[in-house]
Every structure is written in structure tokens, then in C-alpha cells.
Image (cartoon, rainbow over all chains, first blue to last red; front, side, top):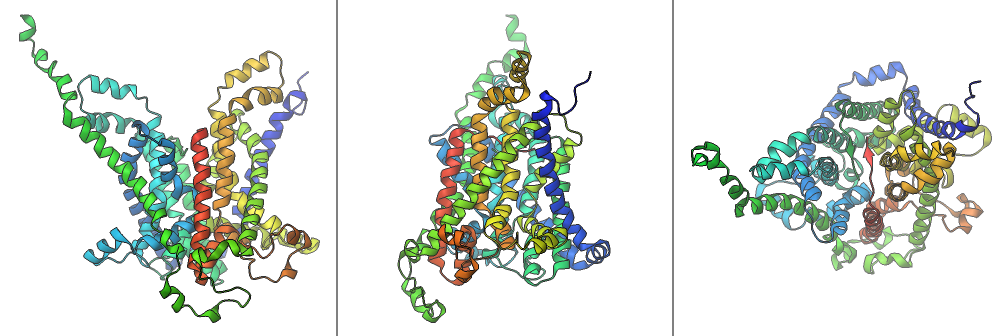
Length: 268
Length: 322
């Protein structure tokens, strides 16, 4: 006689799976209710409006630029964090992690302070560059939040490659740099691409820092997540809902792409 | 000899010589250390350079209109806005710690079994579930918060609230718990799943073959083996709940300016009335002009976040964004 699903041995698996289904249906309902509220004809109307796509492309290019900057710093820094040992490792790792774990609104407030101080004021004066209530401010906020995040993701990607390959490569006579560029980078390629997608999505999701540090200029600094807040304050629920829909689609598409590539990106 | 005629012999001894060249290793290490050093210095500078915002300058005092401040609060001109003398600060801290504690307990009670199921059992459509859970982490928090508002304040749930006479949104107890739960659960789940993934399922199979039930195998084998990863996940979920900003701002708003009658007796007895979520309070105080006060609260959040992330590194946390 086959045992029923709720017989003795199956209660615990059934309980865990029921919890997963409850959680996932909560999140699905959360996202779907927004679309039900908006309705089909309003979706078409707002999606065909150029104001939406102007903001969308602004989000895409700013987050792409800050992803590129983060990768530039994050790949070597992640390699250093993964391979080299240094004293007070946990302390330094915690300092690197601070911008990730502290509320991004706090980061915005703190950026407010440093842009008027030593390196930034000299750079700004010399190049006649104002970092603040313009697109450079947006890029700085996104870079600050994603840079440490990128380094952590890269560290995890490099951690998954056994160090033995490098030892062998060096014992065969390759230099350190040659080993890194010809061996470590190709081996970590999947992890790096997957992490880059996560970093891009994280940069495109950043807005709390903008609230104190950048503020809004219509058509210049209102990237999608921030525009959600602005239009919410303006009471434009149609815009807010439709832009939320675009943000959700962007995030889901990025995560699905990451999964298709097959990279596993670990954070901690 | 024959070795001298072999062309490889000329390269052979040269290779270890090149490997041992003093410049290469030094340059390599310096190159990579400098990027890590930039990251550490940038982060440290970001948090240390703002320490002087805590001191009130003479110019700031003169530029402020005393009339802008409420009558019942003295002009905050002492160090860091004198935040320790202000009941608003202690009530906010109280409120934030209480709500995040509830959130973390709830998230672990649901999340640890769910993560175990997600890690061990075959579920149809598991890939879709994992993509959805991981995308919750990169959906902008403002969008998540707006979805919360639409979910609870429009449609069937709103009718339910009207009929039963209570509110999810703009309330301390269910509202703030829901707002901080949404994102902290998703992050905690990824950490707990990673913790269970790192435990070899073979041990459990052995326990089951020796006659223990699935629950007993989980409780006596997998749970103790994944203990440190689970603890790190709990810390991670708590830290994320503390860092929550936009969901609380959208879904609950601020409570600092509301009259005392708006709060229940229980809330007044717990001393969480007329208080704000800590990160929302930072924003509100800086926007209001109490810059020193806001930065003092910000440094308290930084201190809490730094301590918890240090604890997490000591324990050795692992987490996926799948």
C-alpha cells in the first residue's frame, strides 16, 4: 500500500514546502497586485509615453557606467581580498562591507559631507566638475554602493577557483600577471559575468542615497527608482505603478539572465 | 652533452629565474593591494570624514532661526544635537530594536525551514522560485514599498481592513513589521539556503538509513552542522532589517509629529509612541535642519551595522544571490 503524502514520514517535507509556497505566493501577490491595480489599458498608455523611456534609458546608462567603474576597482580588489593575507582581516573586511550593510540613506548623508572635502573639492575645482545635484552625483552614489558589493562578489568568484592551478602555472614559469590574465580571469569568467549582472541590477535599484545627496532634476537625475518616489510625492499613481512594473521587470530579467549564464554569485 | 643541444634546456633554467625575479612579485602584489587599499580607504574616509558634522559651528547657530524649532524642544546647539537628552531618540531606538527583533524572529521561524526545503527537496518550478526570491534583493526598495502600499491599501485587503476596522499601513505594529520583513526575509533566505547547501546531504541519508525520521535527521544532523551559517544568516537578516529605509518610509511614514492620542496605551507603555524608524529619523532630522542630530543617529546606525558585520565575519557567513 503506497503511503499517503501526509503519512508520518512526509509531514516535515510538506511543512517546509508549504512555507516556501506561502512565501513565494506572498511575493507574487505583492508584485501582481501592482499590475492589477494599474490595468491593461493604463499599462499600454504609460508604456507608450516617451517620459517613461527617457527615464528608463537614463537608468540603463548610469547603472552601466557605474557597473564598469565598479568592475574596474572590484575585480582586482576582490582578487586581493581572496588570495592575499593581511593582518586584522575581519576588521578590514568589515570596513569594506560597511557601505553594503548600512542603510543607503546614511550613505547619501555621508557623501554629502565628503564631496566638499579634500580630494573631491580639488578635483572639482581643477576640472570645473561639480559633483552633487547632477548626473555625476548619481554616478557617485551608485558607485559607492556597488563598489564594495562588487568586490565581495568577485572575492567569492575567485574563492571558488582552487589556488592549485595558479601554483602549477607559476611553477611552469608563467609570471604572476600572465597567470592572472591567462588563467584566473578565464576560469572565473562565468562568475565575473554573473556578478557583473548583479552589480548592474543593484546599481539600477539604488535610490535612497540620491534622496539626500542629489535630489531631483526632471529628465536629468530622476532615474527610475527615484522617479517612483518623486511621482509618489506628486500623487501620480499611474506613473508610479507603471515605473514600478518596469523596475520589477528589469530586476527579474537581470536575475534570469544570471541564472541562464549559470554563474553562481555569492555575496558572503 | 646531449642536454646542451636540446633547445628546451636553454628555457628550462630560465623559467625559475623569471619566476623569482624580484620585480614581478612585488609589482603584482602592489597592483592588487592598491585596489583593495583604495576600497578600504574610500570606505573608511566616507565614514570618518563626516565626524566633524557632529560639532555645531558658530555660523550654523547664527544662521538658524530659533522660531523654526518647536517650543517644547530647546534649540539644539550642544554637541551632536544633544541626542542623548532627547526622548525622541531613545523612543526611536527602542522602537527600531523591538520591531527588528520581531521581524528577525518571524523571518527565521519561516525562513530556516523554507531554506531547508529549497535546498534539499525537489520542487516543480524551483528555478522560477529561486529567480523570484533573488530578484527581490535587486528590485528597487522604492518599488517594493510601493507594491506594499498598493497591495494593502487597494483591492481585497483594503476591503478586509475596512470591515474589521484596523490598518496594515501607517501603523507601528503590523505595518513596520511587514515593511522590514519583506526584504530581510529574502536576504536571510539566501544565507540560510547557502548554509544548508554547504552541508553534505550524505550525513542525513546515513541518519535516515539508521532509522531516524526526516524531522529527527534535520534536527539532530543538519541543524547542528549548519549552525554557524544559520547564525550568520540571522545576523544578516537583522542587519538588513535595521538598514530598511524606503519600505518603512512609504508604508508607514513618520510618527514623530503625531499627537499622543494617536497611539494605543500599549505603545505608550512600551515607550515607542511618537518615535520614528531610526533611518527614517536620520532623513527627517537632516531635512529638517538638525544636521548634527541626524549625523549622530547615522553614526549609531553605522556602529550597529559595523559590529554586526564584524560578528558575521567572525562566525564566517556564506550567502548566495543564486
